[in-house]
Image (tube, rainbow, N blue to C red; front, side, top):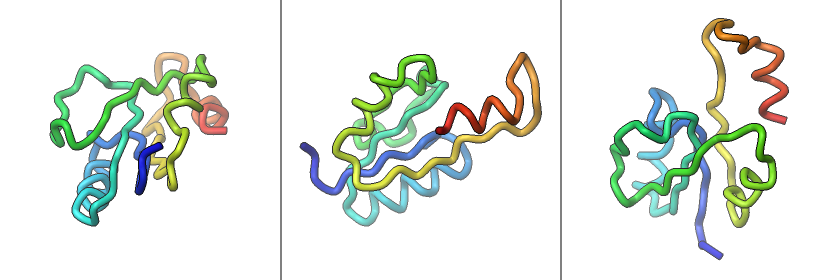
Length: 93
């Protein structure tokens, strides 16, 4: 088990990046779950990257195991490609 562990959704995005940076500055261990695992990791080895796959809740649960806090920044700006606001809300439950 990792001590002082927090998980930030979207740590490579605008809001999540600032949350992750502050957590690291405060000596926390950080994981991110993201739908964009191919993006460059601006934190290098300091932030572990895991896929945000809504269709595999067991995998998501394993990623969150041991975390003290989940900072959920997941949202959609507008509905597109079959993604609706209702679906986005359901995905976070």
